[in-house]
Image 1: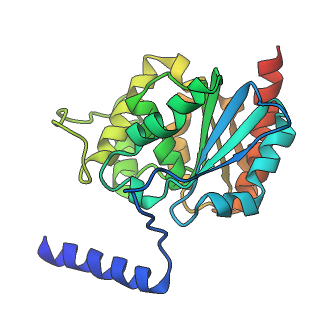
Image 2: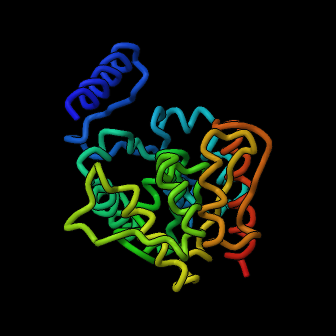
Length: 252
């Protein structure tokens, strides 16, 4: 155990020296960048970054423009909820208290959350803690755990047949993957939760192995596979497609 921990710490230290991990500072409020029209929109899309990114990276990639072109009635709030905000398990409550509640107080009644890669997991962790609170979720190639948990669920015959084991006292670093999937399993008997979720990913994405495990919980029409890998060059236009359809439904 000690050797594994020492190896993980060594890798993290090397990455920090190389400037590869955007750790942030969770003692500070979650950073945000707002993109609005001349008048406030009636809906808000909150976007969580991937592990290596922050709000500025998403802005440079064109995410706010893609969403607002697709849905002119929506404002966009990019967040800097990077790795630092996940490590103590407090991300969902921080998002709720610092982002979602203030948005409600500003008058938004329709709030969506979108997340790419690690941000996709963050979006689902929020949904787990505050189920059904958001109007809907958009998952862009979400990280949903390692190969072990995905193979375990697949070998059990799928998410409906999988046995997640006894409920622990709390979710922590050692069981968060299992507990996230335990929550997702509840969608089997509550399909209305999965009907609010969109999934988009590249056909060469390194995290695409999670798609067949998650997809039985979602509507087929809300799963988009597009050419490309694990990159904003796939996620930005895919988000535009997704929010075009969301805007059309919202207008009805």
